[in-house]
Image (cartoon, rainbow, N blue to C red; front, side, top):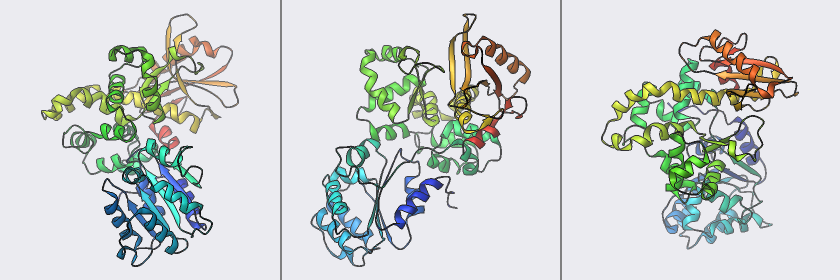
Length: 455
């Protein structure tokens, strides 16, 4: 059975509107396995599309393969041997029926062996007598898509009529993807696979979450065992440095000074690689609610993607053991740390849900955590802190992931924290507690409220 097509309704609508016009140029880019190819398969009109996936072969072989795909639009197109890309593209643009579509997936791979292609496509798009052939380019390497298509020095810059960055899906779609009706199980699945549809599809072939973890991630033969290296290779030249930074963050080094010290490098030398990881959405920088963005001393760096967080926490430090086929033993040890891992992801999901839903009859701005001295000068940490959109109130809350939450104790603790919160002085404060078994009453919320908000 084909895996369900999830979300992407806005992207699908925009692509279909693009292809309904006289001629258009669309660009799709983003992290691998997020569903760019599946989106194209849903959007491309049957019978008037040529879809080609570029690869690492030499130009003559790729020209022949693309010509074979163009046969779907132009009968007999591949009977000709094309000596160069200019001849092939000119023939395609001159003879393609109006309203037809040429879609080239993994476009950076094609440019790697034929760097002249972007300029030749520019010539075709800019020609005043250009046909009604639509062009769509897609690629997983965000760095190369910027350089070849989206950057200001790229030949195709400024010509796209639709540019879409395809990212991970929201946690709320996990239930449908993995066919689970239990909200808690959906959160735990997201804590491993994140929002990557292909990971969900692979996990769905296993009887349960632990079997999927063992087969896909903890086995050297697993499809996702080396996934981080493939992911980093798409966009980073210095793979070793990026992997080292992620490994240290995964092991609990969250301050730049800590990371630099462990690498025995000056902190200033890490600014560029960390900025790149931030741009790719693999790492995020946390600051306390209300802190200035320039306050780097209070910044904490965390792995933003749940799958990478899981991998660098459990797989990377145990590669030798896993190569020795000790995956089942590691899985047993993982169970003892499981709640702590899920708790971190749960906090992130709660914060993400706050501006997307209504709590206490109010809408809220972005939520952050907060840490620092309380009004009594004692250390204080709060999981969730947000300001209402009308500026009149603060939402203060705790996210606790435990199988037997003591709601009364948690409520007392967060109320005590709210009373010591410096930014709460003179403000109306709403207090909430998020647990796996929240009721939705009296400020107690659970996975159902979060999952609904994150669809």
